[in-house]
Image (cartoon, rainbow, N blue to C red; front, side, top):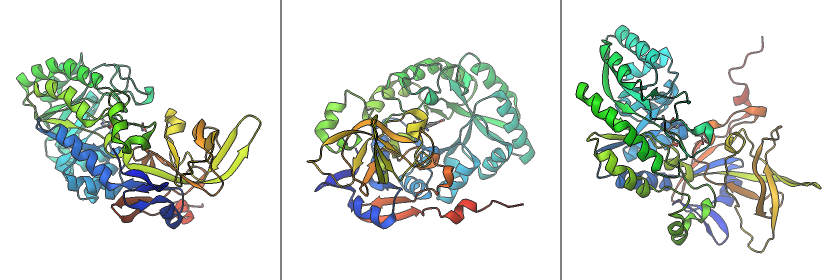
Length: 429
Ligand code: LLP
């Protein structure tokens, strides 16, 4: 569920009319609903109540400080993948001892920073990394807490770029080698073994692969526990969200129907994983990103031109692939809706494209949409996760602002970049 809805044919986020807002803040602009994020967090927390658990929000999905702060308020821990993300979490008021540090390529200065701040655990992905963390901890005169990320080799029905749980992926340590690597970790003087982690991929819409991963890892966890006192098992992130017809989610009847279809609610997920996780008799960590913030964000954009050719019709809008790269990179589908709905207008088949000089710069191709005129504005739905954070200054386009709404309260939580921002740090020799 989320807090975007039409009232008298005007799209609102919570209590705010987005057409009016778009005129005030300009376009393109990201808009987030705080209530949706809080609701998503609370639903997951509630669904997992029978388990001793900690939700470590995957910071990479959306690392705006205001969103991190909101999740600190909700009691989240954080999964981070860089020194920069740890810096942001701390700046937002998060605690290092509630952070897990993931990623295959942790750099020495990041490890040193994370150790000095006292992160809860490094989720380690190779023996080389174990050795480096051990060395740096020795240099600092401390013991580094670690878990191994184990790759369970399960099939995940998702885009191949975001599937991580097969042994052909670069992630984690193979199931067949994990015991040996734990033994190696235990032999290193400056490491403390804390747990085990896995993450099988992202945008997964059925609970089956999660259950399969837990079942495949259970014998390993039991065997490791005989030798090392594990404090947690992390099942990672990956719960998928609805992208198609995302707006229809305001209607409870629609959701009910959808229940057996293409969405994985917190309740569905929990009811599948609770039992196998309970059998581990360990505190459980989760690292959700998309499922907390994905449907809490939209990208507002304005139609600049209409271009009709013998082959195709194009609506050229002021947001581009530099603002939202998911369609170009993963053929990601995002629903597109007008800020002002005109129920009597005819549908037309159209490509919605941006101003960037690449044919991959599109948000929709040959999509049936209600006709839109130049100057009218639209919302690209479900862009709260992996939207702004994957943005770039390609084509020297300033990054859009980010706006957080709670009820009727509107806060610009990141201002629009200026042209001056584009040249900051550059030097003419
Ligand atoms: N934990 C680890 C170790 C991860 O690598 C990720 C995501 C997560 C948790 C969070 O997964 P989530 O709950 O958000 O599915 N840019 C892509 C998604 C990349 C996901 C990378 N890892 C996209 O836009 O679809």
